[in-house]
Structures are given as C-alpha cells and as structure tokens.
Length: 340
Ligand code: TYM
Image (tube, rainbow, N blue to C red; front, side, top):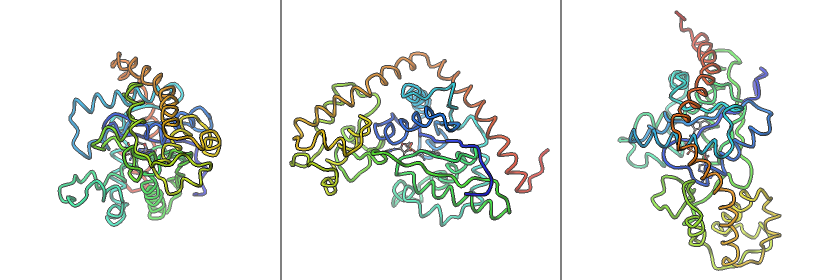
C-alpha cells in the first residue's frame, strides 16, 4: 500500500461478450452483491464493452448482450441506487487513462499474460492490438476510480498483479503517491468453476460445447440435464474434502454446491459424503434451480423494458464520469499535459 489513505472502493467488471455463466455468477457477480450489501465500500460495477470488442462482436449482439448483462446484474441483486452500474464506453476516462497506461506498461509485461497467450495462440500476428493492450485498459478501469478492492475469479489474478505494477511504476516514475496499490479479492469455494465436461478446463462462455456450462438463460430442465450429464469418475463421494484432491470433476461439483448453498466445503462433505452420483447430482441440480430460476425470471422481466435498462445505465455512467474525470484530469496534470 502507498502512504495515502484512499476511500474504500470496489470496482469490477464483466465482458458482455455472450450470455453469463454460472462461473461468472459464483466467481464474480454473487460476490459483487455481497460486497455491496456489506456496505463497507462504495461499489462501482461495469459492463466492459470496450474489452469485449478486442475480439469481433456483431453490433446488434453486443447491444443485446450488454442489456442482458445489465439485467443479470440487477436480477442477481446489484442495486443501481446503491452501486454504480454502467457500461464502460460511456465513461471516456477509461479509454483515455488506458492510453496513458499503454505508455507506462512494458511490452514484455503484456507478452507474459497467460490470457493473451491463450487467446491469441499461435495466430498472434492476426490478433487485434487491443487484445494485446487489454490489461492496460483493465488497469485503467480500476485506477480511474482509485479502487482499493477488486473482486474477481482466479483467472484474473495475473491481470490484477499487472494493475499493481502499473500503479507502482506510475507513482515511481512521476514521484507521486497518486494511484492505490489495489487488493484483489479472490475468495470463497468458487473462484475457479470448471467445465462440466472437463474438470481441468475453466467453465467459459466461449467454450464450443454448451453442455460444458450452465447459462443464466438455461431453464430448470436444461440445468438438471447438464448436471446429470456432467462428467464424473465412477467412485462415490468421499467423507472429506481433502480426498477430492485428485478428482477434479468431483471436486468441481462439490465446490459449485457449496457456493450455491452458501455452505463450507467441510459442511457439504459432512452432508453428502458417501453418496453416489445418482443421488448427489439431482440434489445439486435442485439447489442450482432454486438459486438461478428466480434470477432468470427477474432478468427476463428487466429485458421486457430495454429503454428502462438504458436509462439506468445512463444514470450510472453519469455517476461514473463524476468520479473518474477528476482522477483522469489529475493524472494528465501529473504527466505534464496543459489543461486548456
Ligand atoms: P470475464 O468477463 O471473463 O469474467 C467476469 C468475471 O467472472 C469471473 N469468471 C469466473 N470465476 C470463476 N469461475 C469461472 N469459470 C469464471 N469465469 C469467469 C472472472 O474471473 C471475472 O471476475 N478482464 C475481465 C473483465 C474486466 C475487469 C476489469 C474485471 C475488465 N476490467 C476491471 C475486474 C476489474 C474479464 O474478461 O472477465
């Protein structure tokens, strides 16, 4: 941490690049709501449409997915009266600060990002420049609000380390104590929800197999079917969580259950240890439906009135600009830009 006392403030975001998954919900969205409800921090939550366009997005789809993501946030419990909820492109300080950070961050730092390597793969010459610079925009998202805490899933840890490096280098290069060294908040049993088809791969909206994930839009039958068909080993559930160490698929289902039921993994093992899959999977599906169905219903209700969603996002972006613009202006001043 720097010596400056920063207002406790949470920032986090989700890409509206497809429907949200159970991974997004348990790893991020549910925890956004918990942090909002704790009332200890100002919360700023963002649909990162500028991040989404680092890979091709059909404009009509992007519009629809952004509204759907906003509806999902609200259905999950993000309250626009208590948290700032907006889409990234409408607060220009993100892109403006990202440019400054492009000049602070080093090519080598970006090249080491595992997400860049995974997404660009062998075809990096054809990847967009934006995909390479993506983590500098993410640092700008966070630091444009002087956010002190960022709840994310495990896969974003490296990007948050880079955000800390950018803040520290900026502070050092300009001899200031201006940007906070943000703390990642990666906790709970579901910081890395795995694919239902392969326990070594993350559950992801971009996985070609729809059976690998639970979507916010899935109905009760679909959820039950996906859990029933989820890949597992043939052994029954053991008595303790530690015994799941080398059973990634089984451990994943237990983690999901624990997160959905808001129980510790030890409490879950005490409850379900010894059960076979024929007994456990329907029970898991039931709990998932209990948690997800009301949210899906609520999300569809919001989607019936897209103009209202746009109005809410508009109000959110006005609040976002109020916080981020003075921080951007001060950053430019520190760097030597003349304000005209
Ligand atoms: P994105 O859109 O891929 O995912 C949004 C959030 O969901 C979490 N998540 C998961 N958590 C557990 N298990 C999973 N299988 C799973 N899949 C996704 C992610 O960790 C993330 O918290 N770069 C970010 C978005 C972003 C951001 C930011 C986040 C842009 N700017 C500033 C925080 C702060 C991303 O692509 O997340």
